[in-house]
Image (cartoon, rainbow, N blue to C red; front, side, top):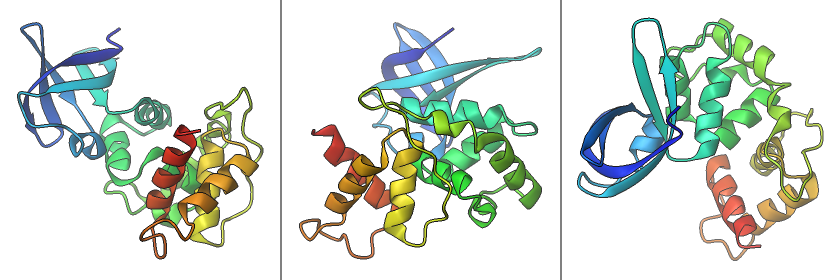
Length: 205
């Protein structure tokens, strides 16, 4: 299995790129979130990868973070969700935001993704809401149960961080710092912006 690729970005066109590794060009399918972070052709790139083996083809999928790859694998484990749908969801939502929608059974948010209808959104929620509780660990602890629907943007950010494995106290402290008076543009910030700031603040601890 090809776990990651580190090489020179040879070309990029939409969701298809080519990475040159020691003179061998690897064709890689990437979500829009990863494509937007790629450097210019000729520069070095590192991607976490998953090789999908099918009866008539081999397709390599690449992601800028391990969290994105895990979200892709979870999505493609849902019955009726193929790689194309999974990439579309990743292109629309970051893992923390996606997990918060699943945990809070927000069908309306998921149907905003092209190609995802109401029945598909309901299936994603049904099959993933219990699995994503495993989340990522921090300090050897796993997340507590998350059941309530968030009533504010900050609460939604807290739940998203808990879905990634942070305990509520850690998540609340990080969100409070991310939305504090010292944060430029905190007022009116989106859930994703708050989550990004919170993760950066926790990474410094």
